[in-house]
Length: 393
Image 1 (cartoon, rainbow, N blue to C red):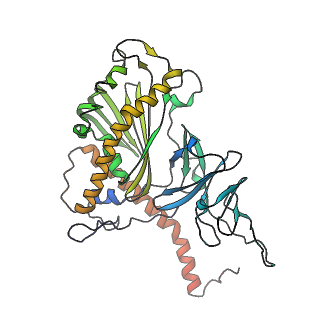
Image 2 (cartoon, helix red, strand yellow):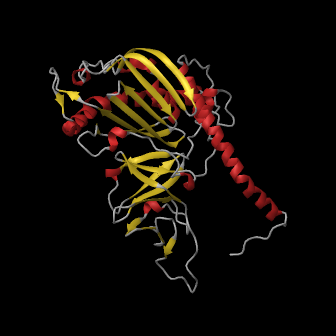
Image 3 (cartoon, rainbow, N blue to C red):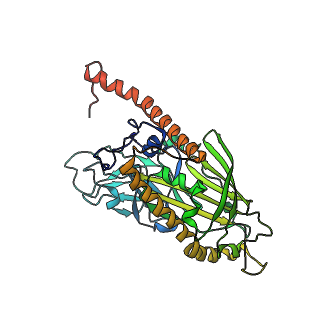
């Protein structure tokens, strides 16, 4: 997928615009302009949300992909444009295993190959055109797309969640939730791992009195830990078996480009961000629990029937809590767009580590893209100077 360093932002009150990645003068400005390396697997949609015969537009950092499920239930992802007149194929229809352009009926298979044209060819052969296709998978109830170099997809790891892999009574319950927030992905990563914002959640109290006890960057992972009171809300605390779960500490990681947390091996979560553009991010949350107890008792709720409880918990506790975060990061984005050149006062060193990793990974991606395109540039120069013949149609 072709990426750019960044685009310009909204004008500030004094008429200037936030810098793109190349123009950024400090770490925070670079982090707020950086994309995410496409050579990873990204969650893009709930598996149940895309029916047979349906097509949906997916955006990654401004680029559009047509995701469709054929009539046999197989998933395909192709570049969202018809090679004929460049219309979005996500405006089209699914016929069998093909995606058909809404305009002239040009038909593409799941590999992006044009296989049929729905009108006269005027004595000519079928155009030999092909659009890009993307590896796609289903895991943990989510659809994932690999937006980078397809040949790297098989060797690129996905999040490993063994508690959700087993198909037995020991499988942990999980009901993913998602939001689309008007904020840069780096603001969301900062939010979910920086526990200095407990005031925002004073009603639900998911964590209180947090003290950072560990911070270490190992390769492409920022590992951290807090001593903190976990799940102290008046409702949520009733479901946690505090006699068997240590709720006085939590470990977390920004496992680029994913985020995760763990409370005593009994309460866990993952956060997956999909950077739609510089100011819009879809974010998927997977909270999963070893067990709940019936409030005011010590009776454990069996794993096989926990899913209905999680659905209720999501609606009454998790989603309202996360909506507070959504309001906050969208307000932060609006503030940054206006005051991007204000002095930086980030106090939590974990935030600095998250941003440094985001910047480093984006710089590496841009450097690799530049190296990859250099032979193409030289070929174009040779053609321009007459040293190499143009390809014939």
